[in-house]
Image 1 (tube, rainbow, N blue to C red):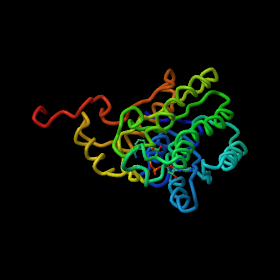
Image 2: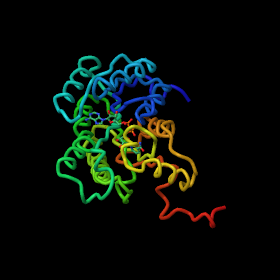
Image 3: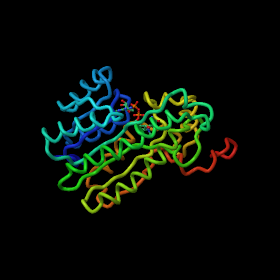
Image 4: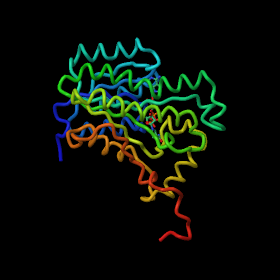
Length: 264
Ligand code: NAD
């Protein structure tokens, strides 16, 4: 199958390097003919993102820090001038202070709570609004979440609260924008070794735990997420919106790991 995204233009937010989930998504979309613009946060990451964007034929690489609304406005004003219209949006952005991604959730500070919510949750709503204004013939939006939103994952702490809010935002935005033919979905990915993933304390342990215990007995790759993102961003999923789609090798279906002695 080729050309599923032919003639479609979209913005990819959240590539930090070639391990990023957003990069896995960009590769899958590129293989199906999508034209993409990229954002990066800060000059250091920009130097990594530019050659990657070039690999997928993109010359639109824009600085954007979602903590700063003016920066978000600038990004969309550039997109408006260059393209005028947008077909899809990928939001793969998350942040919380590393020092609070360990120990007790109860110790979360007010400052980090607010910052985490703004960057990891509200930013999706903020960019979705601007993207929707450019989706004249309908469109699709996708964000990235994690199962720590609905069940306690050690050390994930305030990120779990932000992801719960993000997932609720997906449903509300899907309802708001549905009448305009705009679909809004999320992928809930299993642990992937990325910069953000490594920020959570004991990340290696969580990674190998899921690899060992998920029904498929393997870890989630950025290519796994890319394939599912292609489905959710293309017309293949034309009747799907407000959905939280798990790409975690089935880990979310377990109520407890299957004990070694009961495994076949
Ligand atoms: P990553 O570090 O490659 O990507 C995170 C991105 O967020 C980076 O590009 C970073 O620049 C960006 N970002 C952080 N603060 C920002 C800000 N203020 N303005 C603009 N951009 C900002 O890690 P990743 O794992 O690919 O993360 C992408 C998304 O996937 C995140 O939402 C993360 O929570 C989610 N996710 C990750 C995993 C995992 O195990 N790695 C699992 C499920 C969901």
